[in-house]
Image 1 (cartoon, rainbow, N blue to C red):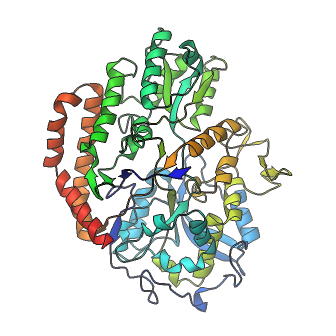
Image 2: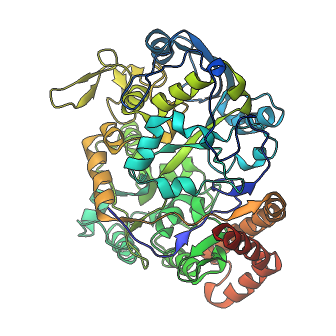
Image 3: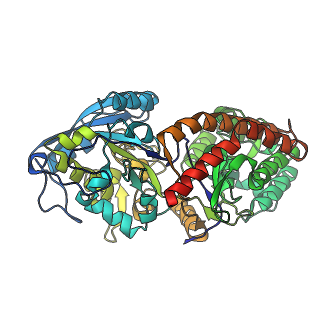
Length: 552
């Protein structure tokens, strides 16, 4: 996998982005934001004096940290989980948890932080969402304490993430969000196909490009006259063709679907442009509209998941969006429907006009730390625990796999093998126990969005999925992260409304173009004019002014 520089996707001012905000923090009194702060002995209770890279963290006396816990519906938190037991017995750490149901987590998290009632550790937080709290001084500029986190610093260095980390600095110089780190890009989504229907069309190879995919859909449609459409897509109820367009966009030099952002960094121009008005976005939308016009893609692009999956399972369609987890889901549904062993596979991601790429960025959801935590007697021990659990090889393995001899065994070659009575994703499917629900491991609160080493990521995959993942990583180029535009508080406020109304307008027009309600040929200029009337030029002007200020 290599790095290529073309036009870069820039995320500015939307919830999923890494936007910088100028704020005035009321952080710890001994800290000038962005500088190295010193932790006094009074805040070092339980901390290890010899803690460093390769050292297992164990508090020198029992410590309890408060934790804002996102309670996932698929694995409701249990006090007697093996994870909590071993953290207490082996590391002298317990948590005083504030458990919040997943559906309410973001809202209640914001209320607690905004009111100054946040816990020491604030889990399951995506970069960009911290900006709203910086001026209030309720969250810690954790960059002032990176020197107390040796494993975090080592991973940043070894995995070449220095530039990405610097891109997270706010206008005051501080970094407030501790991201999950990935050694390699996260690649999961593509298109799942019925191999038998593809073979009936004389097709054995994955399409190298999206144009070839379009041709294959046509051949499959003709060779299987009993189907309604060659493809009917899922994950379309929140954003039209959300997954499919997102997967395609990186090879069209734009962003779309789930990953749509109003701002797109054009490296040749050294500036941001309005994504929804670019020629690259138009080309992508035209492609999707062409699939529907040709009768190969189901025009029901706002159907719910159950409808789309049922069409695939019943044999009415030959392809559907999927990922490395849904292969198990589809196979199970085929079996439950007495369809037998229907051959399916996940296509390698096709290339496009902009090459064969993987998205930029290897940061995932992570943590915030409350400013009040720096006043606690155990503050230094808290940083050491976070550093060990989320960033050391040992801590990451513990959070992912559990404890050797209890949840897994290790072969002579080092290969980890999950106990036969424990299931995780596609491993040991149908086993009576679940690694996350019954033991607390592979839990998104403690293993941030599977942010981890390549070895650990691949270790939790079946051979089929690991091979597919390796092919994507080896055969594609990762785009670098676009430069951050550090918006000040007033600019962020001014652009917030623009971001929302422009994004809504683009999504509505995208659906109309794709389904043929509007013509990409005849109505595109009018659509661009509509975007300009809603403030597209104003948004881009503000972003580029902030970018110029940031870089100078």
